[in-house]
Image 1 (cartoon, one colour):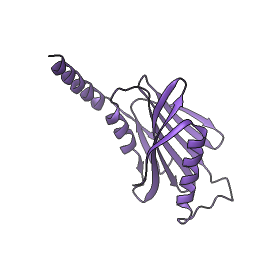
Image 2: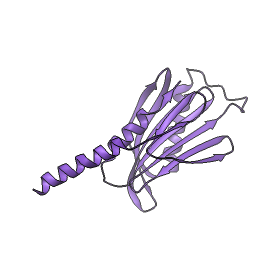
Image 3: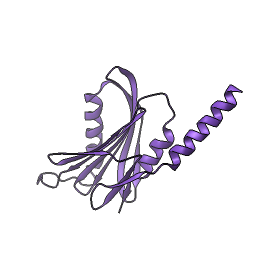
Image 4: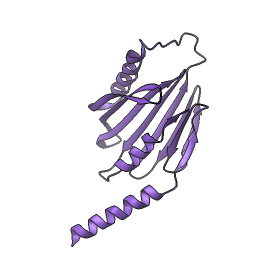
Length: 167
């Protein structure tokens, strides 16, 4: 009986989450992303940061505009090294980082990278982070989903990442 109740509760929760109204955000003229509710937006120099924190997860997106740097010239031959540099920097900045997976991804005509890793953060051991990185023109777009609890938020994470659109 307890198992039946748990299954019904989980199904109802998934239905509620999938039915909730998501907020579409225009990151720039070429890209959009949807959040499970309205994110907080912060401008910091050449970066715009979109962040939504809940009890179970964090959705974080950074758009760094590098068009003001005349020395920033990445060719398709340099792209792998560019993405690996960002990944290496993220892992080096993390406490006790462990890579779970890393793969190439594609969104329309834009090649990107996805890394899933864990790190220790603010008293949480092995906090799982999924990070996608894209270079769109001269803008670096980093999309992250941090999972705070053992709650199943995979459908929310999938919807978040799948909502990223390049025009």
